[in-house]
Amino acid sequence: MKYHRINLIYFSATLTTRETGRRIAAGMQAALGTDGPAPEIVEYDITPGNAQAGEVMPATGEIALLAMPVYAGRIPAPAALRLTCFRGAGTPAVVACVYGNRAFDDALLELADTARKTGFRPVAAGAFVARHSIFPQVAAGRPDSRDLKAAREFGYRSAALLQGAHDPATLPTPAVPGNHPYKTPGPIPLHPRANRRCNACGACARQCPVGAIDPADPRRTDKTRCISCARCISICPQHARRFRGLLYRIARAKFVKAHSTPQEPRTFLAE
Ligand SMILES: Cc1cc2nc3c(=O)[nH]c(=O)nc-3n(C[C@H](O)[C@H](O)[C@H](O)COP(=O)(O)O)c2cc1C
Image 1 (spheres, protein in one colour):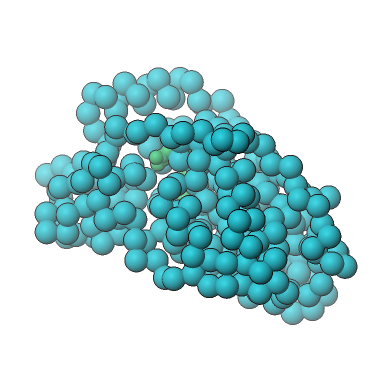
Image 2: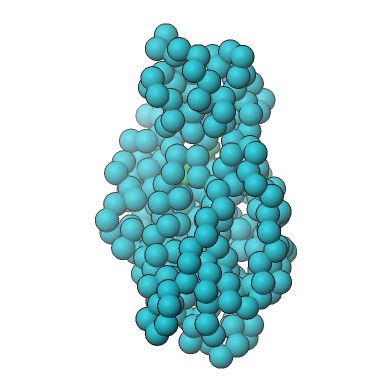
């Protein structure tokens, strides 16, 4: 089967999911370009609150690559919702989650299930590690060169599998770890706060995926909306925003102690 387009759909607050997804896409492109023109990669960033409306992706000639971070063992709720704006028509899909070295729990299963429910056919799934966006001491420096090599190889193998299949619809579905019903995510009582360096430029308010920061006064965050994704921290030009306070420091010490043993990428292919 020939493919001319890879559609990379991602949610990525602090860009590690985007980086991993792009590397998977590059591996897919390399595999599909071995005997003919390499397919184009088209990106759909569903992180911003005003993310563009979705598309219907045809069953032939295109592959969807869905890349999501893991939040509390699930895919982020706003991302799950925005993902449903995209529809497949039996379109083959590769699904990947990126997690901060604790566990991916039910996130990869939820992503594969969501893909199926919206008309895609997942043929490969992978879980990759990146620095923890709330506790960046955990998995610091990841994805590193080994992670990115594993991501590219996963993309290559997934695409080679599809390319080699006479009819991709006959490929078996990979067994993805996780449980039904999915974990119920508990509240995360940690929210970034600005210090005096904040000059109220409003970049954080414009880029917040859920509109939790007041554009008129960016020092004010609506905690009921905030998903603790840390995007505001990573994009603040003044480096004014951080997780702060005693509760955060206690949680960080416990978390670092419990989850610092490096985890490795895991892949599941319908071979
Ligand atoms: C609200 C929240 C919950 C998270 N929950 C988990 C988790 O359950 N397991 C884990 O290993 N990492 C967890 N992480 C870490 C992220 O999955 C990880 O840092 C990921 O690389 C973030 O992707 P991004 O850089 O694309 O935003 C969580 C991060 C956030 C912000």
